[in-house]
Length: 70
Image (cartoon, rainbow, N blue to C red):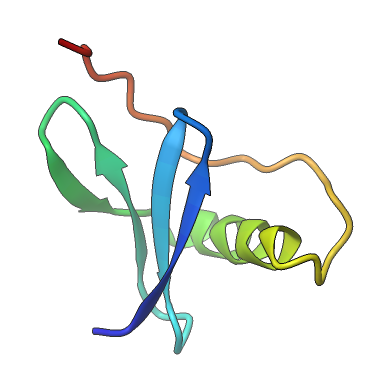
């Protein structure tokens, strides 16, 4: 699977497949990738485009994992 990764500071790590069908985020507490809801896929894609400076900065609505850091 070929994906693009979006890292937002220490808050979140997301992926989006190049075909736009799949996406997900890293769950810190479970230490695994979880699939994102279909409503989050356009948000992840927008975040990737903003990081690549292809879109102006804007607010994103993304899932966040609040795992316990040790």
